Image 1: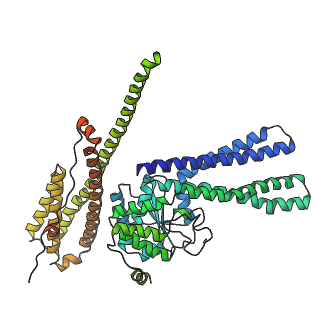
Image 2 (image 1 turned 180 degrees about the horizontal axis):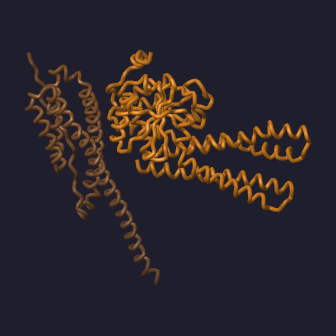
Length: 324
Length: 189
């Protein structure tokens, strides 16, 4: 447990360091190219690098302190009050006492698919997000299983790493898009109309950087997959089952969830945070296996069933009847 | 010559330093486990206080409809006072079991008064009480888990050596009685 917390903190520091170096390198490359092309001295490369460094450091600090709010607003989740749904409120309160962490904030996503995730930088600033479909379709024991799973992510500091990755990787993706599009649309048009050498030059620089970033983006995706080991889902499952003392609750919940776990607002950057893949079973088949962020649901259920020794487990037909 | 004299000394010093570092690590982990037990206990305490605050309110409400059930009400108040005065974990656990059982008989009494059952204030109090009771159960689970880890740590090697030196004492579990579960099953023919 405590080794996990230390390892998550270490990995977060690595990710931030890689991000800062990466952004600074881009700044240096732009400055160096300008110096080389116009032969102005070497001041531009240093200047651009310092700007990029400052930007990267600010962005890292910002994503450390505000990442949870950014992620929550990205998914459009709204806070849940005690009056609105006392059932969920009491469940989260009780289970966080059992887990020995402060009670996290609760948010609801207006989505029909059944899914959930947790975010925040530490247990004191934790938050869990549930979809409307999850609250509607799961019974008490199953919901407790899911909530306990998310609480153990909070307790393990999995949320810190997961949330920072969403923001920093998202930023790299946005920057690469800006570079690429500014060539295709802005830079390209200007050079053809006015034939000014500057426009064409900058367009070329942006194209090159954009292309480099696009080539690198699978590498970035690989970094995510390596940083977020699939092992942690198993770990959160078993820790969650320890909190509820009822592994069958989570096992039954996973059976139901796997039938319909799609979340419309989820994307490649946020995918790894959810309890089950928000793309469902059908999409991204080509990437599954090698690049899958979640272990197969069947394997997770099997491990939970081993813990439960079959007590309280429902069969598939029973669950199908409950969902419909 | 010099190396031949120094080598054993350096080896001994190195071993002492390693042992010292390991000792510090073990001592710190025991202390943090003990703090977790204390923290878990204060979590139980928070929930128990909530229940103590609720009981006078509940008793007053019941009194309004069923004033002559004095004996039952008196028992609830007594159990509450016992809980507040409790000093040790064992005393506290005993008092809490009493509160739970007296509350149960209070609810059994309430069943006989339809007006009381229909009272909105009463049903809200009941809902709050149910929430607190389940929180107490969760807090007890966390406390007992923490006690288990702490006790195991100071009873097994090498923690037991430190427990002897620094006088770490094992902690009591917060146990509940479930008389119904312990009684032998009666079979009638």
